[in-house]
Image (cartoon, rainbow, N blue to C red; front, side):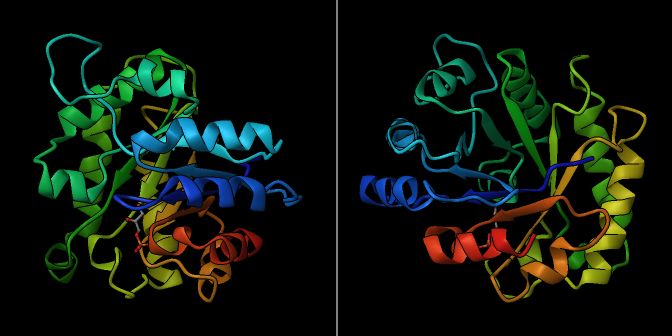
Length: 246
Ligand code: 13P
């Protein structure tokens, strides 16, 4: 049985005030859905500390991680550093990092391996552009992204990764993918991942303009195990409403 999970990706947003607001606001959360917030790396410590002070069950993750262990890599933050601050998850391969920072699947796999080595859970993002979808190549494209990353993972505990399907055309645009598009891609991702991981036990999240209004129709799909939420995760009531839709 896969436990549903809703992950908030704050991207380059958030303050210590927001961390405290979420930590206290989620203290009374009694739902069955696992909740995780990925603030900027500078705020992981604050959110994790506040969550612990409030006995709030919200998990904390990083939005990125260095592909290396340590050394002369100015500006990078390693998996063990994120972990020391209180992060248990790390987003890797987000389309913004692939497009804006030139991250390749090989780099995404290195980053996922660094997280796995310290016992953290990588949330591996994949997703096609509108051009690829219009050309009808989305299945092939996303399948290749999944294979390129999973085939490079060091053998480790099964189902220790989370996959996230985030069609680029749906991220931050308000154009949510339809339930049919999401279910069909998630089933495909699970099938493509099967040779590399225990894909039946692996959670596959959907991300891309998830809101309280559309969450229930997406999260009820058989191959959708949760959501990766950007904009709506910056507002506590919206984040909670999305989790309530699981
Ligand atoms: P939005 O929910 O703002 O579309 O962002 C999705 C996303 O990129 C989460 O990683």
